Length: 149
Image 1 (tube, helix red, strand yellow):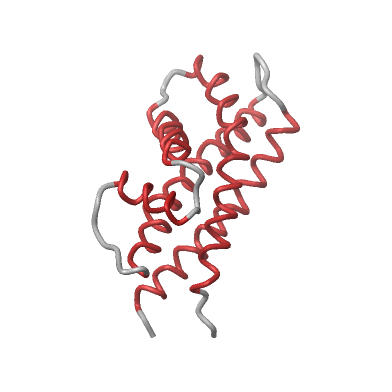
Image 2 (cartoon, rainbow, N blue to C red):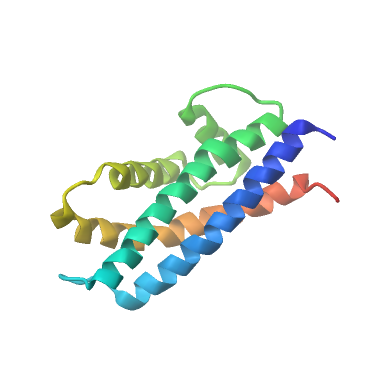
């Protein structure tokens, strides 16, 4: 069996699992909504959402899209190259779309001011549907490489 196919399948499985948790957090946070002040539990829910958003974004860009490249015999290149190839495959609508998602992921990782978190929570809540839509297209694209067990 092709090792790159196994790696892709492992990455898609991890990505799918991450999506389950991202959706769960998103649904909870949609119910809470954006507020001026959060209870400790509500704050924890939003912290989970941002963490899961960042993890899912990392899996998408650094694992799944790169694994697809490898399976399709395209190796190397920068993140921009990986994203541009995903756009050419029709997995994403535009490279800008992933750049926006990735920039938000970086903002999550480097946000230390709790006063700025409400705005960050709002942006994440608005962006999750876009990430989920892309993720569904990636999962569908990856199905053509599904390993039969």
